[in-house]
Each structure stands twice: as C-alpha cells, then as structure tokens.
Length: 454
Ligand SMILES: *Cc1c(COP(=O)(O)O)cnc(C)c1O
Image (cartoon, rainbow, N blue to C red; front, side):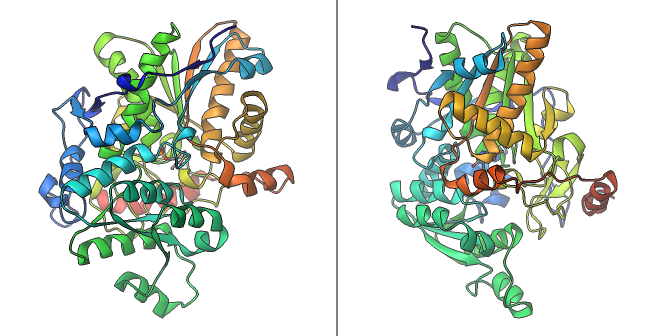
C-alpha cells in the first residue's frame, strides 16, 4: 500500500518559528504613525498589543524565534497536522502531478488560526494581562482566540459584527462553548458603538466598527490587550509552524514542492506554509513557485496597488505599506468571509513586489466546484476560504496534465467547512453568483489610499 499520510513525532514539532523579515533581500518599508509620519517603534504598539508581539512585529534581525514551551505543549494536542498525498484527487483529475495538502483543519477550532491565537494568549498571560479582546466577522478567529484564552486562564471578550451574530449562531455557540463573552457590534459598551447606535439604532455593524470597539476596550481597560488573527507580521511568524512541519514531512515523502499554494485573506496561512520554503529560494537558489489564491470579489494582489494605507476602515491603525484596494473598499458578501479584507500583510506585499510570489483570483462558483470535488475524493469538506487554494491547485494540476509534467504541488487546507454548510446549501441550489468588479470601481476605492500617499 502506498503511504498517504505523513505525521511527525511529538519531539519533531518545531522548536522555533521562522522570521522571514530577517532574510528578505529588501526589508519591508517602515510602518508609519499617521499623524507624524515617523516610523513606528515597538513601544508605540505596547498600549494595544502585548510587548512580545510588538517586538516580533518589527524584528528584522532574528531569523529564528523560540516557540515557548507552554505553546509547544498546546501545539502537541493537534500537531503535527497531517501532510496528505491526495491520490484520489489526482486520479479524478487524471493528472501526472503529485498533489499534497497540509491539513490545518484538525485543530480544535477547525482552522490554522489557533497557531497564532495560542501564542498571543500565552504572551498576554506572561505579561500579567488578564483580559484579551478582538473582533470577529465570520467567527473563525473569535473561536480560536476563545479556546486559546481559556487554555491560558484569560478572560476573552469578542466583538462580533451584529449581522454575523444573528446569521451565524453556531460560530457564536462555538465561542461560548470555549468560554468567551460575545458582544454584538455596534454595542452600547464603547464610545465608538454608542456613536453609531445614536445615529442608527438598527446599525448591523461592520468589521471596521468591531475593530474600533475592541481597540477602545483594550485602551480603556487596565490589563486588557487587543489581538488580531491575520495581516500582522507576528501572526505570519506564528503560522510558519505549518511550513516548517511540511518541510520535514515532504522530506519523509521523498519530495520537494515545485509549487506551494494557499488561499489569501490577510496572508497568514499563505505565509505559514510558504515562508519556510521561500527561504530556500532566497538562500539556496531553489525555484519553487508560490501562488496566492484570492477571490475575484476582493483582488488586492492581482488588481490592487502597492502604497501606504490604513489597516482598517475607520483609519485607527498605523499606515501600512501594502497591496491594497483602499481602506474604504466594500467587498461583495462572498461566502469566503475570511478573504474579504482590503489589504495584504506588509512582508507579503514586499515579496509580491519583488517577484518572489504570484497571485491568481477565482470567482466563488469555481471555488465551490473545486471544494465539492475535493470533498468527494479526499473526504474532507473544506472551508469556503480553503476552496480557493483547491481551485488554484486543480488549475495547476490540469496544466500538468496538458504538458505531461509530473510537478509536485503542496497546498494548505486552512480549515474545514462544517460550520459553513449553509454556503454549500446555497451553492447546490444555484443561489451563489459571481461578482464582477470593474476597473473603474476598483480605482475609485483605491483613491481612499491614494489620498494618504500625496
Ligand atoms: C481566516 C481564514 C483564512 C484567511 O486568513 P489568512 O490570514 O489569509 O490565512 C483562510 N482560511 C480559513 C479557514 C480562515 O479561517
């Protein structure tokens, strides 16, 4: 029988995360204070984030950052995650390509996001913080943080966009099960929420407002810090545990990837699987291709612009040098909620600009079609976000079929879709459609970022 799953021994779970910033030929441009236009220092981030995360955010020198033993112990309850050779998918496609996937859906929260949630909760605890807070849209990050907070004995307050709070009751229940307090946003508990509710008592909320509420809570409560599940450099750092494991597991399988593929929201699961392999392109002249799969409805890498922009709609964050569609961008309500973000991480944006990675965009009907084929062949129902990585993998595998090349493809299965069956339902009844964005529409949104670069 051919070996299909590759698992590492507990001892082989990585002891360090890999810091891409230390090996990049061109370092990312500085993150700026919007008022003074001065480069941010770690201390500037301390009021909002934990000190250790703030330092990691701006660390451009240390290539390897030790994973705290207590975090490694938590990792051991679900890591290593399996690396799987997708023989059945290969057969269905009739491709000579060898397809592997790294299955991050086996974590307690069902996605890769727990890899960073555990690290952020741990650092908060070590610093003497008692409460952590965040926002959540679709609920994946909120669920991961709730679980991590409970593991390290912290109180967790999640602001959930009111429309999601009402439409996705199971995500809410998951967070409650793990012990978090969930507040629909906008709420009366913050100035930001009160202001909005005064104007419109029926405001259904937005991610921008939920972020403002969570940050306000962190700034106004002693011993409370804010956390974020994607986009930031320290989140990408924590996710490199995915690629470092995959590197060893691919070795067990006797292969090295010609292509590494992941879906792209803010870039954390992409960074996680890609960076450990990309370092060999930079340091050893390897020629692996790195492909980010994004939704056509939110195409920041394929159609956005590289410039300084705010990380949030309200303009509360520092200015980030990144590929962006403009912070005023309003993505269509596609089912891959985790990919509806207007910008890309700072490290990733620089790598994209320098040609170390590429991006492709996919309409959502094509991604669900890919996800269904994957479910029927490999037996795992993927999250709508992960379906984008599968669509890109299928596209490349079919190119191999045409050319007859047996390329090795590795993709990240970022999460499972058990709480997204409503979306699959709508796909089967034909209620899912694609959204076309004109160049004019995109240009108009990007103006909100252009203004900051004058
Ligand atoms: C949040 C999420 C994503 C997108 O976030 P990235 O930071 O780009 O990885 C992708 N897949 C799943 C399952 C998610 O929950």
